Length: 85
Image 1 (cartoon, rainbow, N blue to C red):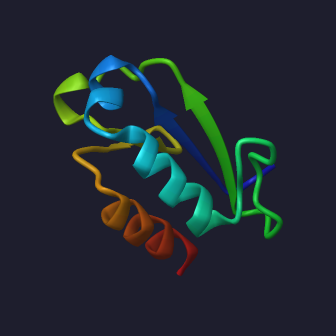
Image 2: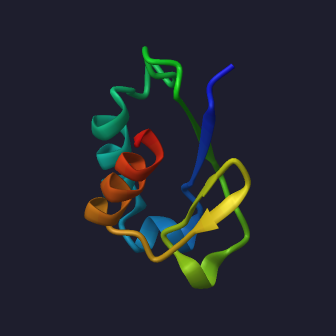
C-alpha cells in the first residue's frame, strides 16, 4: 500500500477552476498517469473522485484525508515535493 493517497476532486466547481491541470501536474510530479495510478516508488496512489464536497476550496485534493485547496498546478507540485521530502 502506498504511503500517500491523493484524492483529486473532479466535481463541477473543481472542474470549472481547472482541476484537470492540477491533476496533470500531480501525474507528472508523481510519475503516475490515468492508466497507472500508483507510483513506482510506492509513495503515491492517485484516486480521482467525483466530489469531495469542499467546493469553496476548489480545486481541492486530499492527502490521506487532509484537504488542500485553492490549488494551482504549481502549488500541487510543491505539495508533492514536500510529501516526497
